[in-house]
Length: 301
Image (cartoon, rainbow, N blue to C red):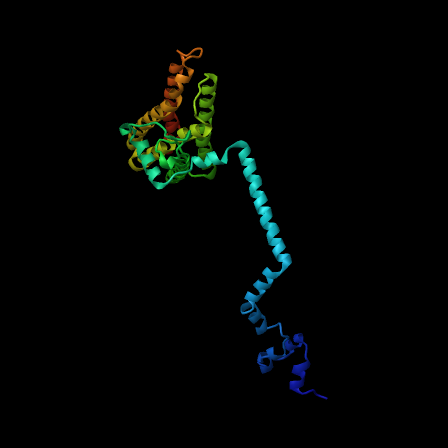
């Protein structure tokens, strides 16, 4: 006995639908009314209007709250561990001092690096035996300008290599590591010189790193002059920026290294110390143009 067509539609399994012709209207009829409550349109309604209630239930769940609190405690513990490990090698508060700058200080410092000849007062100011932050004293050393100068130098190096069709990631990495290594070598050499000659000064490692890193400003200007005006512009800007940097370093380090002569005047070899300190200051300043030329001459053609 043949079963009526509508009865077959109600009891057939889903895979039996392929037996009907493509044009059978029963394939396109709406069967959502017989679907379970969580299916079809009801599912999307629960994800839309009921999403706020789901989030509220999540926050009211004690297990979820405990998990969030545990994760927050782990994050704070990890932050404390990182700060402790950094504090083993350097003072975080002292490092913050060298980045306490603002826009006004950066502009004044760049002008001082470019035009140091008109500057008169080179002494670092103190307040209650502590030096003022860079934003309050243009003579205070900082690490913001050296860091930005180093990053700008890397960008210009990549652009110069790209213009000359010599760009490769390993070449850019070599230039960056070489520039950073020269600064580290310079800081180590100056520290050893001051130690071996028993020169007592208030220069810290961060101070030496800041003064050594100011050369990146001259390197950036030299590369810009070479890229825009060729070899003539390169050597012209190189000569001026080198002279300005040497003058700046001699006047700045002179206040740091030669200012403690009175405390060592009664010690042994006191008559030779002023000359040795002067030699260290001049040698440090004279070494800067050599590094600038070494790190920029092969990038400008």
